[in-house]
Length: 395
Image (cartoon, rainbow, N blue to C red; front, side):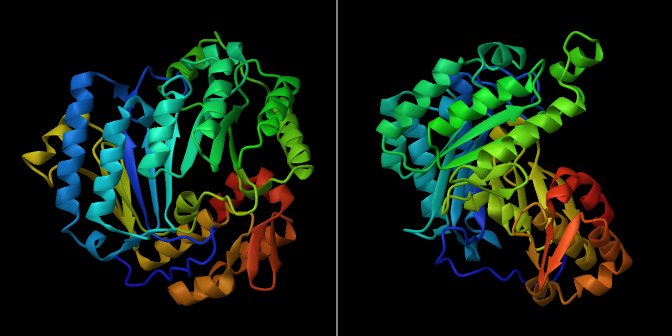
């Protein structure tokens, strides 16, 4: 494990970050055809058992290093579909996380993912009252046919109604998730969906290109020729539509797939991209601390048995040496449009990035994939479109 210490920034800015807590809620109404994340069907019994197991897990982790000595600045309930859980259980889980660890009180960003048609205005109001101050709504699309093709169990109208209900419930920090490059989607359809979303005036939008994950029903259907995806030119046109639309809006692209109004970047995810420390709780959740990363097994049954053998649910573990931790920090950090501060990187790792990467960095800059301005290194507009190629050179 690296002995280098992370230099956590001062939390005077909403965009500055520190360690975060992530709770993975594995339950879904149904499995989306593109999804490769660990999830399972919700049952009343399963939800009650999961809730009890999380409480037991928190009681164990609160006494263990390094979590007992860290001050967390963000909490994120993700999944799965966290909004499937009864609101009182969600409220209790949040309260117990706050009791178990040191959390920055007034400055903490506390997010929860919800899917349309899984929670009403009253429930959203109770979540806000419980302390959740940021909402991430999984629209994915505002076209009913596209939603059906990817197995989403809600309609476009459900998505819009959930957004309106969230505003009425008092949420003033709302993020919307969208996907492009969906089966048979055209650039014109994407332009319409993006326009409808912008009209809602959310604080944050995440826009992800559909990725075919091996073993998913969608990938199999594409392999069999039952479903066709837009070609590369169409996807590139969708990207250009996004760039043009955003350029005439209050939003700023701050990460490859994420856009926010000033002051509303997702601090929890910024910590990931800064390669900071985070605690993951729940089946399939990942934790990281100073170059060491480990996961909880993707097995709900084993997680539910954690009360009997509290340390037996750890899954894969990876310990990066100092240089590998440095390279990973560079690669992840370059996802941010602000890029990385090479001086701060040197202070953190005692490695000079220019000397370390030498000709590789010079070559990428000459190709106009990266740009160096003072101490700041970032992807160019061309580099953003070819980010995976750039990262492969630096990893």
